[in-house]
Length: 204
Image (tube, rainbow, N blue to C red; front, side, top):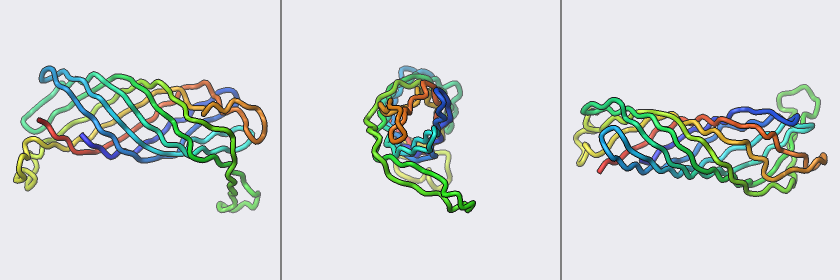
């Protein structure tokens, strides 16, 4: 399966820091091995990007690329000729790769456009985090869709809609300083990222 997804990071707080993220987009590839009609395992590779936001004495944004490597047990409780529902749970790793760091501040003009930003170097580096994965969704086969069912091999293709959740410790990019130019970004708190995705499945 190949999916396009939207990512919606949660908010967490700790050590006087509030951490959140901007909504982003990415892609997800999944390979599922089925042991029986209801039981299977899935292996996932995902890629997305957003900005991690840290509200300390200042407002720091770290533009980030995130890569996911995960696996999950999948249970399919309901199946018909055209529709299959599924739920899953598993885990894996996330790799956070910082691209650039910015500090945002209000220039006190009272205008919604009165926000200035400056690129800064805070020593952010790549960081890996373990993640717990959960979610569910459904596949709807092309053979049940008018016109699409006329395609060659249509019975092997399906449309997938799913919700995914990723629970992980918020990244700090190994920035553990305490200065105004490079404050600590460590909340020591967990975050929950919600993902919605739509994609195409090929079954063989």
